[in-house]
Every structure is written in C-alpha cells, then in structure tokens.
Amino acid sequence: MPLQFLGAGLIALAVAVINGAGLRIIVVSVALSVVAWLGYVAAAAIGFETAAASGVGAFVGSLVGILAAYRLHVPSVAITTAAILPMVPGAAVFRGLLGVVESGDSPATLLTGFSTLAAAATVGIALAVGASLGIYLGQPLRASLGSVIRARARVR
Image (cartoon, rainbow, N blue to C red; front, side, top):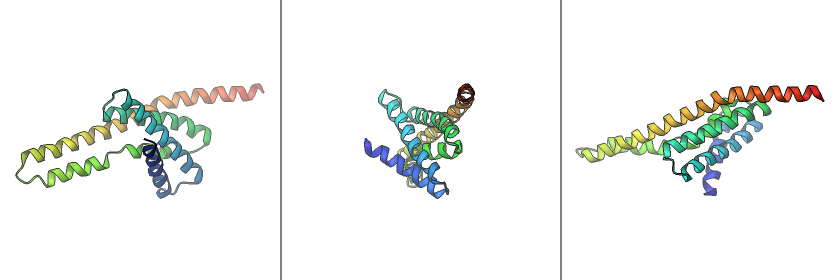
C-alpha cells in the first residue's frame, strides 16, 4: 500500500517536471497526488467500484487543490491535473485496444477488449466528473475562506 502512494507521488512529480513547473508547484502537486490517492483508497476500502473510487479521489484532490492553490498562490489546474493523473487508466486502455486488435476470429476476445475499453472510459469519465465537481464546489468555499481570512486580518 505505501508503494502506491509513492508511485502516485512519482507520477505527479514527473508530470509537474515535464510541464516545466517550479519547485513550489512540484511539491504541492506531489502532496496533492497523495491526498487524491488517499481519497481513492478510502472509497475503494468502503466498497466503491474502481470508477466510483477514482471519481472520489479526483473530487478530494481537486477540492483540496483549489483551496491549497489559493493559499499557496499556485495555479489550481496545474496541481489538480498532476494530482489525478496517477488514476488515469492508461494500462486498461492499452489492454483493451490490444484485445480488440488481436481478437482475430474470436468474438470472446473482441468482447473482452471492448469491455476493458468501456471500463477504462468509465474511469476516465469519473475522473473528469470528480475533478470538475471538486473545482465547482471549491470555488465558493475558497471565496468564503478568503473573506474570513481578510476579515481576521482587518481585526488585528
């Protein structure tokens, strides 16, 4: 299990570095990927299927990401993208396409390939919905927290 968190962090690190991010964005992206993966693992532990758990992970990652982005002055889209990328089902897409291409005259292999592709598409859609919902709900929350912080600063 700890290796999964390490892997998620390494993927986010690689994405941030490849996209030319600065050190602050890299660190926040890695931390956020661990938070998103924790959301995925928690949802899977209570019985959610892979697609739903991925959506929960993306939701948690993007919600925390939009709040962290405001406080740390980093772009929320950049850190959210790096955070949810470890949950993208790239290997499933590859296996599904390989099954379709290599099916030959076997309808069972063809159906298995399409089934794998459909499952990967479902995970991709869940990631998009989870990330969008986290950003959508995080915007007003961030604005509310910002006004509270500004009010506290005026009182002092």
